[in-house]
Image (tube, rainbow, N blue to C red; front, side):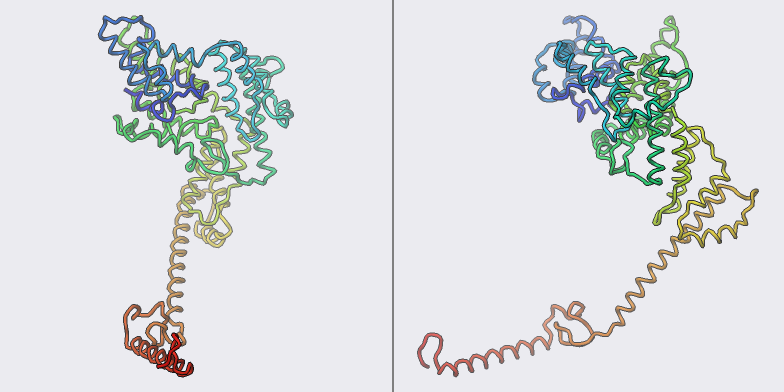
Length: 523
């Protein structure tokens, strides 16, 4: 079964707790997927039949292997006495969705008064608002689309108002004529891209360290504590399952490559997920429609593969995205909506990516291989948003991005290549830069070796004045003494001289005291 490889977090860090009411909707959606995957969802719909041994076995399996292990200790102790899985789910539903007037007012008040934090990414805020509307819908309060649009526009900070009002969406997306959540989302995303471009220009391209996984500042994605926590939550027993793609690639999609609200790695996430679909032999459900009901075998297989495909998609996204996309009836409609959201690109975002590509400079200490890869990724990202840079322009930009220490090397490189328009090839420039960078690295290593050898020679030629405090010989210090720790002849002579000196000192002090010892009597 695929459930143990997709949702093991239900049994570890994602256990349902009575302290976190907002997590119940995510837990319920995931546990229903797991029960449907194992073919145990009928125990929630069919009546209790104590005479049917198969029904009892399915109920026990769902109870002891899926429902109870995904609860924390308090909830498990509270509801473990209930006889059936349906009774447990009904009790949990009444506990977390106890619909009262005060609870509805509290949920709606939180949704209405929710404000965007100053440095929060706009996509994360949009998905947070959509998740809160989904929780309200499960509580029995359906928020109209226009009202969601108004609350979303009013939830941004005050300094966003002018940028939002300045955005023009065209005749088909004009908010003055048609107010909808989709148009309000587009307006906020365009305004966010324009603000990023403005900040980049004002800061002269200053780099700010922001994590692409959690959106927080101060660390990269590879050092993100949230990504490391998610990776540790998947035990190694889930990584050794056939086929090999699910055992190796998919755990990365659930941890390091998980799709978050920023969508910065959406294209690589989509490529890895497409490969996973192909190797799992379920990619056809994204292209072929559902077979007719008359063809029972094909229809049954298509439904099972569509469920698996939705499993794979939802298991590789964050919880906020899970709440926004889990309710789609098919994997194709779900994937189309995800693509439509994250494939949207504004002109401000294209300008920002182009300026970052043109302004990127290789820093001292960076290898040429890493710099080439970085420039290639930026060019591919520009191509994905509709800006194709010719190879010749990429070659000139790559050579222009080298640091000042490469000035002499670049002059020699241009002289050797005898640059002409017909000879300007991007692959050739990358290869020659790699050769030059490798030669520079070898020269740096050789210079370091020569400097260390010179230091050793100078240290060996240094004249040592005085004698060693350990052995009494000249030519070295006590820390470099070859006889350190050994009792040499000089050491014995020094000890004898010390004893003689102590003896004479005692006799001399005895005579000065008039022949009296410390007790006061005469000898």
